[in-house]
Length: 140
Image 1: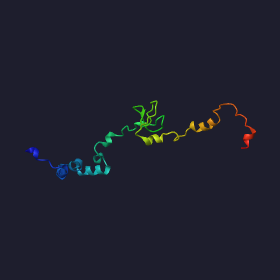
Image 2: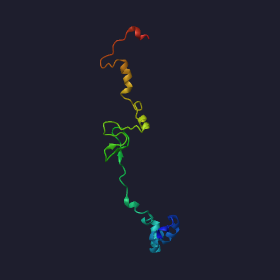
Image 3: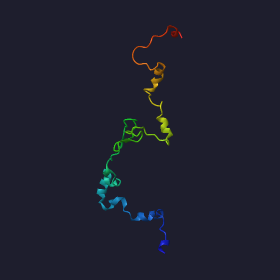
Image 4: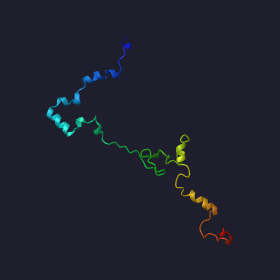
C-alpha cells in the first residue's frame, strides 16, 4: 500500500521547506549592533560556503610545446596533446581532416622547401663560383 503513494516532486515542496530555514545564516541570534557592524565591514558572514578558504588552485596544467609551439604540453604527463611530443611521429588522426589541413606542407615558413625548386634548376651545385655564362644565352 505504501509503495503506491508517490512523493510529490521537489518543486511543489519548495515553498514548504523554506519555512524551516533560519534567516540570513543565523544572524538573528546575534545582537543588533554586532549585526550592523558585520554588514558595514562586509565580513565573511555574507560570503559563500567555503570558497575563500579553498584559495587559488593550481590550474596551470599545460605549457608551450617545444615542437609545435602550442600551449598543450602537459607538465605532469610530459606529453603534448596536439602533436604527441616526445613521440617520434607527429600525432594526426583521420577523423580530424581540418587539423590535417592546418598542418599540411605549405602552411608554415617552409625554410627548406622554398629553395628546393631554385636549387633543382641549378643542378644542386654547392660551393665554388657559378659557371660562366655563354654569350648567346645572355641576350634572351
